[in-house]
Amino acid sequence: MALIVGTLAACTSAPPRPTTPPPAPGTGSPFPGLSLPPIVPGQPIPGDDGALPAPVVQGKSRWVPVRWAELPGFREDALFEAWNAWLKSCQRPGPTFARLCAEVRQLSIASPAEQRAWMVARLQPYRVEAADTGAADGLLTAYYEPVIPAARLPGNGFTVPLYGVPPTLRKPWYTRQQIETVPEIQAQLGRPLAWIADPVEAMVLHIQGSGRLRVVEPDGSQRTVRLAFAGTNEQPYKSIGTWLLATGQTRDATWPGIRAWIAQNPTRVNELMWNNPRYVFFREEALDGLEAGFGPRGAQGVELTPGRSIAVDRQSIPYGTPVWLYSAGPSANLQKLVMAQDTGSAIVGAVRADYFTGWGADAGEVAGRLKQGLRLWVLWPKS
Image (cartoon, rainbow, N blue to C red):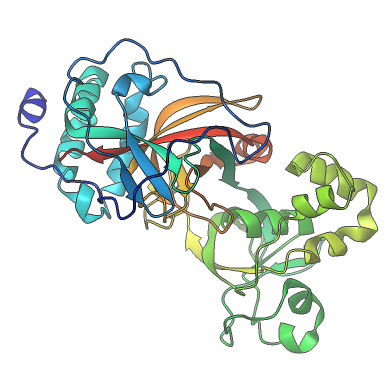
């Protein structure tokens, strides 16, 4: 590893250069009540003593160079956990990071101190701010893979179908309400991939974009498969939680709060669900061996790693970029290295991320409640 750390000048890359003059730094969060306290930098990190580069404008964001000591928890993070996610990104790297992947692979067996020294020597941290306002505070939410009982055929309570991409799909296609109520449209959907029992679980699956099904086959055997995102009807996504808040139906728009509202209003389930016109179609994937230990493939095209993969706005942070994430709140305190490997229709803005928590009930509990302040630093190869 000393060879890698000692020969660091060979494969560096300049970040994208500014295209417009950056605004003055702003303060405050665009998400009221979610601002984080000021960061007090720790002691200087050994080796981080060179001149800082100029700020960079990248799409919706402005990147401001900082010292490594500004990154909360940099000395303490278990970097080896993130290295597995980084190795995944190296399966489909962009041109900027492809040249580092040989070293990333070699460092997978390095000590934390060696990994940290390599990062300090090779990468420059940039604080991510909104390009228009200079705000460095943003919003962190989370997502996960639900694990849902299912059947290949309807019956015995399994009444909610899950569909693959219909052959007649156009953009835009019919709304959720039309798909679920108009027989002529339903005839175009083809045979369902599977059936589940709970319409709320179906909505969770549509919003999360993928999930695991424990499927009962026609012969009575059971197996676990993944339903991966395959497409949508291209209708706008509208949050059912936001609708409940806006109409005064509830003050708790987390998934537990939504379930509580449904339990009290069982006859209004369709009204709630149809408020979101977007409908998601899936493809079935085998889930055997090593595949079961990783999440679904994100927008970068690599499997997601629980606790180390995030979805971002691609116009702010390119896929495959290592990112330092800091978030503190009632649901989680996070100071860690993550990889930008996915995106989502609701993930819009410079300082905005969706944190992949894994699969199953425990991951869903965390994802359902995580909504708190966020700061991000991209870690870009030095020029």
